[in-house]
Amino acid sequence: MTLKVLATGDIHMGRTPSVRDNPELAERASAIHMWEAIVEKAIDMKVDAVLLSGDIVNEKNRLYEATGPLERGINKLADQDIHSYAVAGNHDWDVFPRIVKNLGSSHFHLLGEGGTWGEAYLEREGQRLLRLVGWSFPARHVRQNPLEGFRLAESDVPTIGLLHADLVTKESASDYAPVSLSELQHQNLALWVLGHIHKPQHWNSHAGAQVLYPGSPQALSPSEPGIHGPWMITLEGSHSVTCQKLPMSRIRYEQREVDLTEVSTEDDLRKAIFDAQDAEWEGRLEGEATELLSLRLTFVGATPLCGEIDALTDNLDKLERPVDDGVLAVIDKVANLTQPAIDLKELATQRDPAGELARTLLALESGEEDETVSKLLDAATARLQKVHRAGAFSAIFDREQIPDREAARELLIQQSRQFIEALRAQKYVREEAPA
Picture 1 (tube, one colour):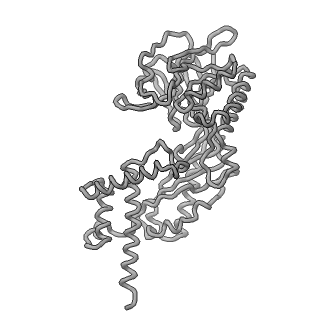
Picture 2 (picture 1 turned 135 degrees about the vertical axis):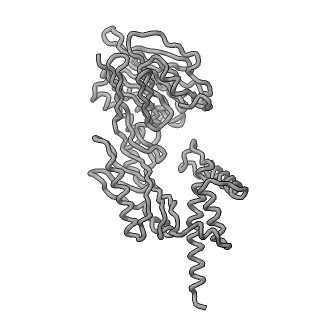
Picture 3 (picture 1 turned 30 degrees about the vertical axis):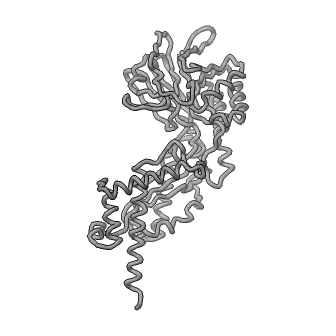
């Protein structure tokens, strides 16, 4: 018998995506609206069940905002005889159980409440068709592996596991229920549906369980690039499982590197930007619901425009151009990692500020660290992290992505290149100015 199951997680109801100067789109692409769209999709596709792998609600401060839409969606599914199975994650470990307790629906099943494994069966006319096992977060942080002591009895129907967890190597530690891929794959299940990581990922396995991170169905920030949406899971018995992403996210964030080596004029730069937008959209999926393609560009290569790029792209955030019917492309951010069209090694032989900076830049790019460069990186990293943690910037930065030493190195390289160009320009002016 063929079973169809719609799987999703990390909806974070209460959040809206990061969209500059487009509040209408931000509202249409809110996490709550995505949940409503998922419910409609499940009904349209006549699925047998909906799986929710945690962090459905975005913490306690969104409890009241999310309660109504969540209840309506679950009841709407129940009206179509569609069962919902869920676990609680680290963001909604306390509020999600409180919401669902008020539902009183026989079609909704919260598995593993309180950090103990639970199970439920999908049945039709008294016949068991699918077993669901799951574990829910009992607190905001869980450092213990939830698979310790996990024992699964034999079953004559396919089994899907629901777990909100951080996929790590065996030697790694995590505050968010650390498990390893090999541990999951060696369990006697057809499929694991995981939550916590917002990037969609799927590991097929010929010998063991498949593992799926559905990811956030609606991309919510530039830190969630790629195509997002819920996943359709089709089961033909215990070992025939197919997983297909449904591209329902209204916003697609992408990051792209643009080589400006052959770029020497403003018109060339403009064409390179347009080409990058067009090339990114060429990778679209059929039926993709994207309305906005938001790009972060990293300029690389050696170009005479190195010192002018910041000025030439100052108003790039105002650029909106159609790349398809109903799809706009915008530039969210630009990083200038280009090099001046000069020989850095030759410049580094000079005994002046530009030469000193060139020597530092070469050391940063090569990864070599003498005492001076090491102190510079330490200071830059500490400063970046202090700014990242400052309350004034809480709406800008992803609080869980703390900038590290490599982020500081990239920033120093970028600023050093621009400063070299400025120093060279000043020297040229001094030398050519009339006496």
